[in-house]
Image (cartoon, rainbow, N blue to C red; front, side, top):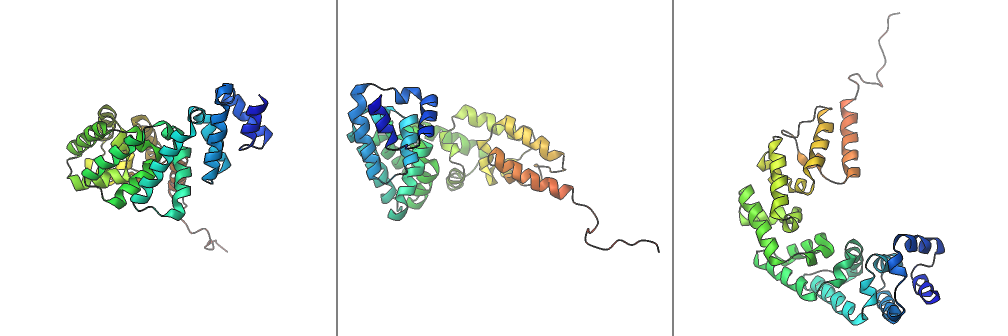
Length: 275
């Protein structure tokens, strides 16, 4: 227990935060004594990359197996990620920030075989994506690019292209704006397309704003109902207002609400009254 406490305190010095981690991730803290050397070596390795302590703490808590295994395995995967980033034209000065975001959004990327990343990038290159576009995808997908495989990406892209009725160049543009097209299986894509078309949204609108496919049918319907109250018809307007997180939508909705409630008179103009 004392050894574990010392290890964790080296990256999470605040006692209150450490207690919270133990409460939420007890299995990550109460590990076998035989793993302590690997944990220590992995902590040292990630500190050598100058990663933020919070990122290292999150990795230890949410992906404990990556810290229990030999450090050499993590070194290989991190080196593969860094090489891919640099080979695609990523700037050295931005690599640390990029790596931190990647590990923060998908800690389990460390557990994937390095070959998976290379295979997926080769597949996308064969599909016509340029080096700059591959770097954009690698940055936008973060670690999720290692969750994919060429076969599932091929099926999802083929289904989307056939459903939308677009060219390969247009499909690449859609993927760059909405990488979800790569990793959503055909049944989910079919449900999303069907739901959007059933409420009067056209395929050309989806093509123009493909990120709407990231939203479930239930969320889309709920947001459309709220917008309709203020006279906004998504069938004739932009779908951009539907996009984003709940917070993003509420901000857009709030602006729309203010516009619809705006008084018809000029509030700063003097009122005309009888003498």
